[in-house]
Image (cartoon, rainbow, N blue to C red; front, side):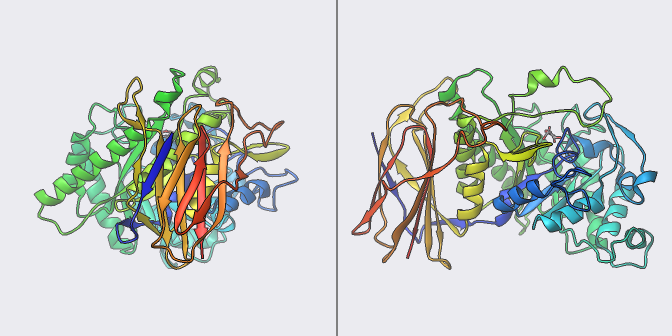
Length: 498
Ligand code: AHR
């Protein structure tokens, strides 16, 4: 099989916004406790922050991390997690049926984020709480001092404000499972009023309103339109959430599911622009795809978890190789929409549906770690309109699925061109060509390949490097024409530079 990629350096989709490589830490399962924080463990520092996790997070160069939820935030009192630890209350967390000890809170998270070289994206509780509490937490985080909550932060030992720039107005408020679930009209009004006064307190912040919890929600599309109708002027981004599964064990169909993401993004862009036109507004709303990943492996196990315990093994998906391929295609899809998707969060970061896993004896990289790391490291610059000409297949739910997903990113400043490509063909290697004569003097720097004959191969603590990338020498650039081979079932990063 053959594939031809056509690009032109003048045909640009948009600049990659680094925040599309964001992630998410929720008070859920072992994400916080045992994931990023474990007091007394030999690999933890004096604050109890796990250094092994920090190293892996830094390897991913995660630009921004959403916190503290997720469903958790809709029942959370942020004040419970600040101040002397011995005074912090143990509280019932209705979202996940557990008991939250509050030994870790926003001050600890801000400190972790600093050490992880990442920014905080804070969510406020618009489930059980509202405008007042959103203002209070913003005051605690961003005001210099001289007011009740900013002085409280200083009294808690944190003189400098955190300067949190991005704030989520609640979480999945369209979902009937959400604590304090609302109609679109109720939520839209609340988001508008909350956002308006938050920007009075700190005009430099950016706000994310809740879009749909998935494109499968019965209220999808009308929810977005009505919410935006109410809060268009106050907000900057609209969120999208979507998780993908292969419960049917149909790999061809599963690997096509990035087409669903593509469609979802295009639809939400259309709705944003419809409301823009209706309001005769000059302002454009961009998208924050702030929860996306594969999630299904742990579903059955999670049904057995006892209620009201603390820190259970929850949502601990062990990812396999085909999950890494889909994650690669999903990253390519996000890049294809770089003009409008300005933030995205791989959900989540550690232990809970995550690229990083930990135990008391170590931390390791799941299969999905690799495409996420490659995109974050090398997918920076201008996304070029990438036309892929190759064969297509039909699956149970999708027609015309390209065997190759690809996107090309040109980093003019660094004089680098990166081709990301997934070969979804299970048996055939694909001969790839791409005319790169516009990039005079460029050479192949590296071709990274993630491949495994077994789609179900996993990385575990006992076998940490079962699925790991290798470098290949099959890519040749001769007279400006790239000739390469995309191995059957593989994720590829072809890096070219001067
Ligand atoms: O990421 C796990 C959960 O998925 C989040 O708490 C929620 O927002 C979504 O439903």
